[in-house]
Image (cartoon, rainbow, N blue to C red):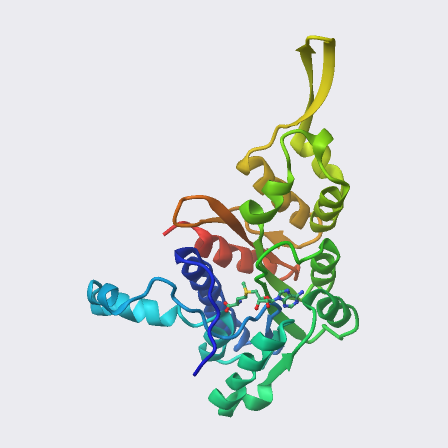
Length: 294
Ligand SMILES: C[S@@+](CC[C@H](N)C(=O)[O-])C[C@H]1O[C@@H](n2cnc3c(N)ncnc32)[C@H](O)[C@@H]1O
């Protein structure tokens, strides 16, 4: 039996649909150029996604096309990438969990004709990315890299290494509602030091304090008291991240996609940034179009 990987609802499909569209456009364009081009899936998972609520009864409610769509998106990002035509020159899948990695290994069997093109690496994404980005000749190589963590596993140092190559296009699922927004407590005075450190490491700066908090004077029974309170909504935080990415990438899509769960709570923001100064304009145009709500 295939070991599956349970997470997500429609937002998972939304995310994968956008990335898939970009990979198709990217592979088509790069196929006509002289670069070697890779797909790097740094939080690769198992290759499968289990549809939590799918029952036979529910399937009968769908039309044929809808069934096709469900089947398509019970595939994880790794399998989706391997099925894209034209093919990439290389597929690099990184997965830290031994259990998930064991499942990923089966992709080599399933995609026998691409076996030599597939690199499977059982390690931490941050350290692998930093090493590869810093110690590889990127001149004749290009890549699309997908960062698809559950939570706040990606450090800014990793994002910076990716941008520095000037050769990589990045899709980054940013942990907004499930991570950062929870740590940004209303009253900054009560924030644990470890939370502050985590926010520094995800944003790569301490500027978020000034950007998201302001001082207010509160009158209490004991007189006036200055408090540092949160003054940041979703829009402000989302724009701050665009600005951070713009400080290191050649181009950044201005319209990250907000992904919500079935209860309408915001979970993640899907960002796109392009590292190559020559290719960025086209890449951003394509990604911004893909990111528009459809
Ligand atoms: C959201 S899932 C990825 C889903 C996958 N992209 C897909 O579409 O099927 C996140 C994966 O990252 C793995 N992971 C967590 N921390 C990691 C790390 N530091 N480095 C690499 N993989 C990690 C988890 O084991 C999990 O399989």
